[in-house]
Image 1 (cartoon, rainbow, N blue to C red):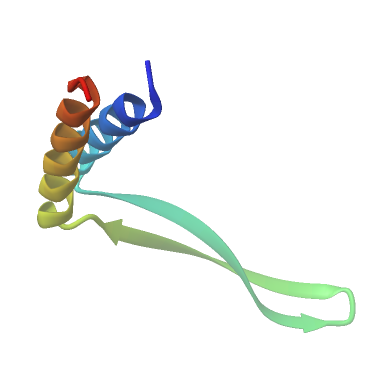
Image 2 (tube, rainbow, N blue to C red):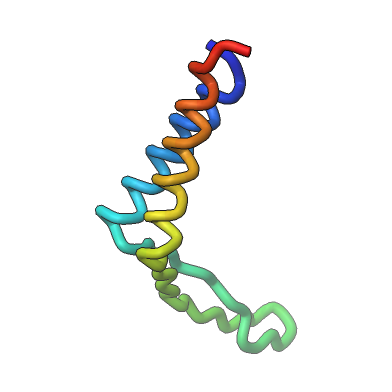
Length: 73
């Protein structure tokens, strides 16, 4: 299996994951204040939305790369 087939499969999987999940959440710790040995931290939950056009683009590009990987020169 060559690199273009692997890249095509990865793009297809990423596009499908973006369509099915729609985004992801993560928690970030942020230091608000530090006084001597006392430290105040705040946990913020961030949400990242993946646009549908980006997911469809990844699917289309992955399909093109995969098909081009199977072509004989």
